[in-house]
Amino acid sequence: SIIFLNGAFLAAEEARISPFDRGFTFGEGVYEVCIVVKGKLIDAPAHLARLERSLKACDMAPPPEMANLPALMAELLQKNAIHNGSVYVQVTPGVTPRNFTAQPQGRSTLMMVANTGHFETSPAFTAGVHVQLQPDIRWLHRDIKTTMLMPQVMAKRNALANGLADTLFYDADGLTEGASSNVFMVDTQGSLITRSLSNLLLAGCTRERVLTLAQNAGLTLQERPIRPEELPQAAELFVTSATYLIAPVLSVDGIKINNAVIGPKTRQLQKLYLNYIAA
Ligand code: PMP
Image (cartoon, rainbow, N blue to C red; front, side, top):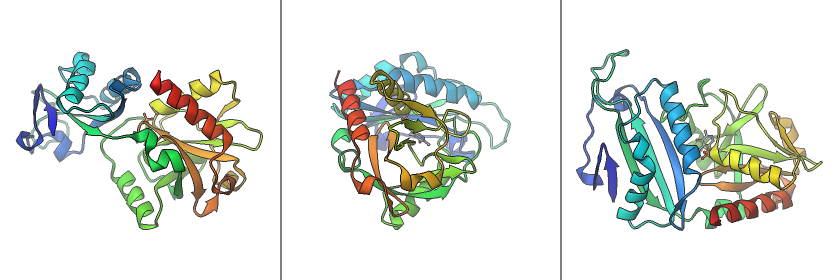
């Protein structure tokens, strides 16, 4: 495939990154995943705004291409002849001696990869997922979209080993988020509930879009933690992310939600979301 690295489009096999890039030595890095449907990037402005926030929070210089990213993402898709899929955008600080506080002299490293994908026909979207709960062992700046994903990798591998699609994390107050998604519950009154934004979870672009669609549809919204003890009584549960879109959750730790049937509000929001991306 053709990737983008530091100002150039090149074959992935040709790409070279310094072993002294702080992304490699210190695990410093931030990223975004934006999907493309029928040639259109979905919620690209929200993803790029979050990238800027992540960079600022990590004290990382934006790459020189920052202002030009939408055009470069489009060019990357075009060079790979991808109309449906995703673009991965990663920024690391670039090269310094392996010294904790050294400031890079050169540019931040920008790497972008495009992949083919049809997320609206994926099994997760159309049929739903079975998940498990795990304590949220991550750091307390989950609002920053960093590439330090060891806890998520461990959680997802553990889910896979248990024959499940994913893991939802919880803390003392309730569910925080999925390993790479936000979590929503519909209660027996029909209210849509998701945790409010803070340092304890990522501000998902899809979460924001779903809240807007739900509000416009006249659904009752509540932003508060979902307690694990509430799950057996939940009317519906789903997770959101750029690649899940809206994935129905059919069971948690073996406890079926709505008898493992996709609920009406989930279906309604899926339909609204599909209309939104098709518009
Ligand atoms: N939380 C975490 C921890 C994530 O990794 C992701 C996906 N990147 C999300 C939530 C969902 O964010 P978005 O809807 O912007 O993809």
